[in-house]
Image 1 (cartoon, rainbow, N blue to C red):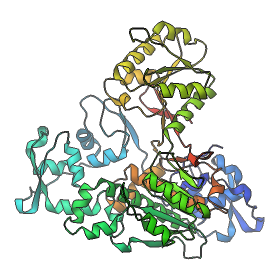
Image 2 (image 1 turned 180 degrees about the horizontal axis):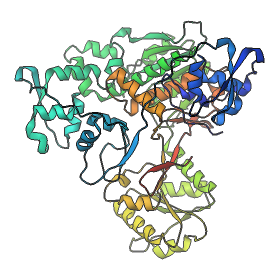
Image 3 (image 1 turned 180 degrees about the vertical axis):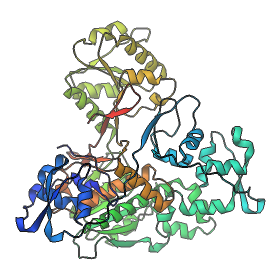
Image 4 (image 1 turned 90 degrees about the vertical axis):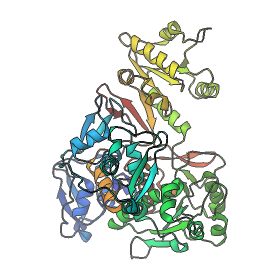
Amino acid sequence: MKTSTCISIKQCQALLVFLLWTLLSTAQAANYTKHTVSKGETITQIALKYAVTPFDIYRLNPDSQTGIKENDVLLVPKSVAVKQATPVKTLPSPTMRIVQPKETWYSLSKEVGLSVEELVALNPKHPELKIGDTLILSAAKAPVKINTAKPASAASSVKHLVQAKETKFGIAQKYGITLAELELQNPSIQAGLQEGTELIIPKATVVKSIDSSTSAASAPKLTTKSVQQLVINKASTNKKLVLLLPFNAAKIQADTLTPLTNRLKKDVFLNLTLDFYAGALVAIDSAKTLGINVAVQVLDSEETKSSSALEALIKSNSFAGASAVIGPFYQHYVDKLGVALRPMQIPVLSPLSKETDKLNDNVYQTMPSVTIQKQTVLDYMMAQNGSIIVISDPKKVATKNWISQQYPSVKFAKYLESGALDVAYLKSLLSKSTRNYVVVDTQKTNLLLAVTATLTSLLPAYPINLAVLEPNETLDYEEIPLKRLTDLHLIYPSVTHENLSVEAQYFRNHYKQINKVFPNQYAVRGFDLTFDTLLRLSQEGSFESTTSTATQQVECKFNYIKNNSFGYANSGVYIMEFQSDLTVKQLN
């Protein structure tokens, strides 16, 4: 069943996709009031007006699952209806911008009145700026702030030696300062940055950045008392979510030689954990606003690749009464916990790993695997009744065999004895009357250049879509002309999608208000997975009973499917297509 995109932070549109209302009885006429939908109004906004949850509205209005429009009449539970709340503040609609030659993050930031950090955070799909990239810019141009601060003295600063491949923005982001502040302290780098240059970073700024960057502002106190219980509702509850995250608090306490500020600057895994946790905290706050009655307990897994506190936590019965567990991060610990909690049938949700080996029927792989991504793209193309032709790297025998077994109608291109693509044979496979999906399965730049050039030359005579079955970084290189990819309407899978809705912008800005930075991919992942899990646990029945419902959150889709060999996998994959105007369209 199709669902709407769900974004949430106090507005929480994600409840829109929780479609279990058919299992619930409808309310009596005396217990509801009627609401006429205004133009542009959403279910979440209506729920907030009457102090109910979107789920309450869906329960009485099952047809609203497919969307609402102006003048629709909805039933709202009267027993909980209260005085209309203050309207939710909306944000200005974002505008789009295609990057032009010689434009930089810095020049764009000056034009639109945002910092470089804010622009980059609004455009996580474009870590490196390239001509033709489509960026999100603020609709309203704020005045450019002029930094009048004085250069820091030696006594109030630290030094940074520029390493190979470092950028000015990367250094500024590392220390939690703006690019303008970095250049103010180091005027010589305005024309460019060179390896070996010694930069001055104000000490006061460094301390501030550690307190507010990444997600340290929302991080738990790094002590053994980090294990805490957060009750979403004061009312009694019979469900509990456990967040099992690798803070490694005991080891940090024991390391008296390394200040926490230094560890936060260097420990990538700790920062990832804190980012994920910061996103999860926003999800918990959102659930609390909606009145979701689930208890949340946070445990420190003390994970590294070679050790963890998992065995001790299992022995101490730390997971007693859990309705679901998010974590651990490393897959081999997920497998171990799955085995231990299997007798109690407690779901264990693997938050970040795409591995699928040696899992149990109570393990949920929340990141879509590469195999699922391939299947999603191939299934989509098969459903279009087009002709599918694969140009496979000669060394990728396993993939070719897998496609042949799973999709026997797929055709394969051939190579000449010289090793070049047999263009004549490829043309014989193409159809002039139906759509031709040509899949390239290679990371070789030369082969991709040759294939895209050949297919582009054939476009006037044949309807062609270029496609890849999994993320392919080679296509991001400038050697592959962007125009070829747009002309061929490249199709590719993605486990996230760029969400431009007002609600998504609200989430990002609310997160920044709390943490002083925009959320990165791990913070958004922490929000999406935690909020989605809380929504499922808020329903009647077990977590497993909700798997028939697909949901979408800020960036991620959750569509759990039963796998005969290891439990549940997430098939929530987006199919994206390049458009001629340089935008990207979601096809599913």
